[in-house]
Image (cartoon, rainbow, N blue to C red):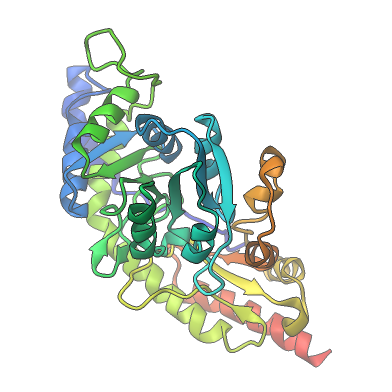
Length: 368
């Protein structure tokens, strides 16, 4: 079985080299390594402030809380449910916007059509690490005096129009779980140029308290442990090589798979660099001759594991059905999406195995 994912971890010796001193000091949380990791990440991204947190989800929760928002937040439905959870947890009303049929990211034109006097913020998502239209969303936020936050869970190392993802909006929030290009086991990072926002998030990750035992806002325990920071420091130097390998695999997939009629892939804009945290295709059953689920079953018979990122979309999940609206592009792509294995330890033979299996299925379908 070719598994859907095999996490690639930094060498243990390099992790221990970073971690040994703090372990021996007994300061294994909220100490020096987290600060070093934050500084190294800020330098790489090119922002003034990075705040390490326990997860991307907790980072999103804290950003929305620290911005003191009230009202409605526009976000995509075609995303992982943590994006929506951060909105609901803050007692904000989610307003779902459709996705762009070419990039599959949130469609700025559809966002603008949903802005009302109750709108307080926009949350964009860099789907699969493919930068969304940060420029157009930024223009909308400025025009309507809205906050702009990016769920950059998939986007560490991605680049938008020559600028690293992490530099846009009021804040961007990354994830470091085992499926990501930088792996800390768990953990997340908030990147921002807003000093006050960074200050409030630092308080928020420690129950809202910065040491006076008099919390500044309603926070919770969202601290990153020192060991996770050690993994992050050890893994930073490997991010670019990982993304290069992901892009090599994605280029092979795109070249071969799009030869089959009825298979489509999201567009990556010129001058953007996608991390390809995931690689997904949309299977048009009317043209391809098989549904997405039939293709997944056929790939499994060939010992290839696949996923459906992201199906069902948020507005069709039970927690969000009261906020449901008509999202035809989202519904079409979500019903057709199939995600293939992509990770840096895949060999050329592994990639060929995936392509051969897909091409075999397509050939068998055409012969019937």
